[in-house]
Amino acid sequence: MNWDKIEGNWKQLKGSVQAQWGKLTDDDIDVVEGNREKLAGRIQEQYGISRDEAERQIDDWLGR
Image: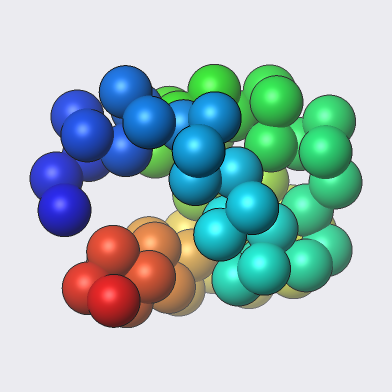
């Protein structure tokens, strides 16, 4: 799935994002608003991982 589709369907995908990254709060997910950069930043902050690792996790999630 490409990121444009993610942004367009963000409200429907919130549950999937929260299931994947359980430490993200509802507020985190609302702030992201489908923006990949914001999502990577929130994952990085909440999980204490590198930006590259957050991007890798997002790519893995997209591949499912």
